[in-house]
Image (cartoon, rainbow, N blue to C red; front, side):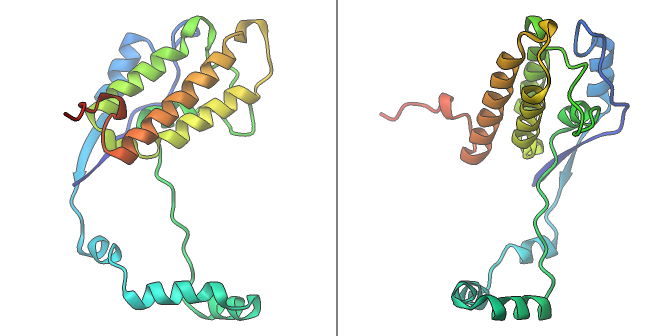
Length: 188
């Protein structure tokens, strides 16, 4: 069974001294709902691959460009898979900022960004499969911090970038292996 998280409350950042106030964090967590999805018949059928489909996809690599373009326009329209969305917590942070603009109000001095990372870890440990898009979301936050202009009050941006990238790698590793890779029991 797959789990998804949805966020129905307002998305905002707390005061400049803390990323979230206690009341704001409580209301954010109260509005977070976890829903169980049961696999449908269509999703179960879409997971199976026919042998003829595999053979056709292998043969297309050997065709010329002219025949590939003519067959792809005449055949079914190809759909690109949509990457999963980050969790509601990261969406509320990422959604506040225009990707074309830099993260002006995101605090990084004195380790204030760590509150977001630790809160995300708690939510991730509660329901890991609701966070399949979080590695990309954390990397997006790291990139936005990396690109913003340096100021004296942003002296810890490099540390925040490293922390967000590291967290992105950890979440991705956990999702790929199915468990915390550093906590696996030693084999006897």
